[in-house]
Figure 1: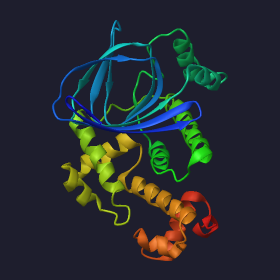
Figure 2 (figure 1 turned 180 degrees about the vertical axis):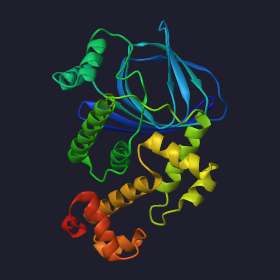
Figure 3 (figure 1 turned 90 degrees about the horizontal axis):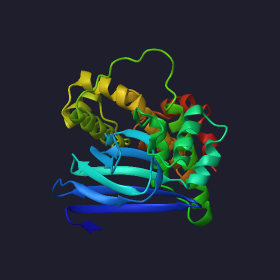
Length: 292
């Protein structure tokens, strides 16, 4: 679909009363935008791009940075949007208020406080601190984007994934006790490069790149890549690569007729034993147990 200053690709799924949508927006020019926002309670995952929204008559502006997530409730009101990047990619998961209230009851303190603000019709965020999208969240999102089910099974699968993401967001909203280290990442441009590094790795699971190659590809030195990646994604570059390769291996074991040895070689493991050891360490059992 096109609009005056760009275009958008939107994929929407319905899982009973929960709606999931994946948006990829590209702007030709960066122009402030005002639109009427309907009442919305949404799990928000900002995968790429930087922008800010200000709800009319609200005192604060809500800023979105790459690879950040939160839960946002906004009452029906005009919103003013300022975009700082020509490409935005996000996943949103909309919950009806009644469904969310039922899930939040007898849950974490953060979810209950958030549900109370929603019930009062107040603009609300689950956490005042936007947290990074973790590797576990990213893995679930990949499962959503590549869902192989159709019909009622698809709705059941996507609802389960939406609830998994809700649980992980609630967990992230309760930071561990103790003082936190000062943030290493200061510039939005560095966050954009690190998101590009994650995407670069994700696109090369079959031929895993080394750290120097990733650093050159995104224009960062290796120190900033290593430390920034760990801060933004909660995992080292190598750890993230390993998790994603093995998650892909698990999917191939379940969904194809390929043998474990074939999949291991396809994903760049030097030997079946190397692949078996890595898979067992990740999932607690050998890959052969996943064959139907």
